[in-house]
Length: 215
Image (cartoon, rainbow, N blue to C red):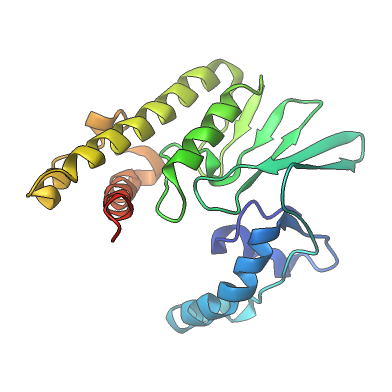
């Protein structure tokens, strides 16, 4: 199994695959060690159905460069894909040119727990891989003929919010200005991710504003 990053929706299922070897970035293991149990305990108090879940840490990690695994007749190339978080990785099925992108590629880039410049780097890298398909962390599979447009759209969105939030920081009414930055004006639609895109967009703006202004 591969944990593309430490967030609950990508790691808490580890315990349901006993005997599996779990692979991740080294930071993913560190973050799960530090934050996994407290986060799970908090979630259990809100949702008793999680009582069967336990944190299982990755067994094999890498910190830099790439890690290649031979599985059957396929080479799986694991490499860094930061931006959504600082431990993100992607998995390229080399022979098929299919990329499991984790949350480094989503219908709406989400950078609250990560870094927007790292996300820009990751999306640009994905666009240069010559892929057949992108399996997003959330959202539909992106087919070969759709990849260029999807990459450009995500880069456009990230550059737009970066520019507009920077402009907001120079205004006395920064909070009001941020509220006026619509998701559509940044090149995305609020219908993405089952209607959650607008909420995630607002969080992106607030988080980026806080980081840019040292708050």
